[in-house]
Image (cartoon, rainbow, N blue to C red; front, side, top):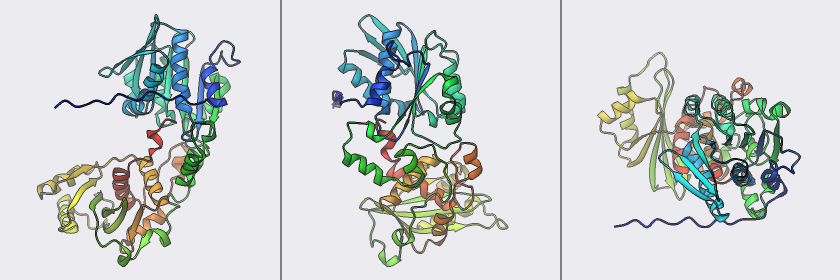
Length: 425
């Protein structure tokens, strides 16, 4: 049976704000900034940065060059295609551009009239990513969510822009004040010959006040300051400052009598604590039902011992999925020997996972049984690492974090990353 493939809906253009118009025109000969070599757009989520930047980037390339090579990068190629390329192709089609998307080689050939250029897609997720872009000569580079990329990749990509009159385009939501991109680019605009435009949600005229208010209510603390106010601020203090025992801690009698599904999160430690958390899902909410917490450096246990404890821990509960610390290979092997199935290596993306848990707490979609004493303790002692923040990194202190890691694995898998990164920013 043939599968019906839905055709993407035509792009619906909305009025541009003053800042979006600046992005669209900064490179034009009549602009006072046309001699600049880069543009940086930062600020809040849903501010309309990406729509204006991506379209302007292609128009600039088409108006300025022909038969040249350009680059476009996201943290991953999948994220780039989802957040930028998909909407961009619809925008360009509505304006008479032709786009040939070679998904095998991740190259877009974009043409208008007799002018045609190639746009190579890259993922800049880690230090090894710089190897992917070495050797190519580019006339321009577009970075989506540049603050999520390693410096080595961005340095390598910008070094590839060696064609005369090449320009670079950066957009991002803010990180910490000591983040390398803030120090080397935003704090050095003159030397970088870069235009800086700061966006808020008010600069996206397609958003209603109701939608803006929904985003404001969703975040708090560090995420509110960065994603709503668009500020480059330090992550400090207690990570889950939204956790309120009067709201999120439940007596056993107040827990649901039945659950639709069960999940387990596991943070395995050979010399550190090992934690199992059983979570029940009911009507779109998650409840930490019970915990296993073992930490005794003087009596280390083997993976096989923990595997037997795990089987006893879940008992006859029908667990839909078990999310385990991806580094716990030996423990996973022992579980499989005992016939445990439905195991999945957890996504260990720390900051997105913390963000997901924070939103779940804010929206009252996550609760914990009063019986889970170690988990309750960690909610109030899980803190940001000040020394890492001074290096521009957002990291928790690696102490009192084992239950929080096990919890993060499940919440991130079930609720997913808050849709911030899934939307055009």
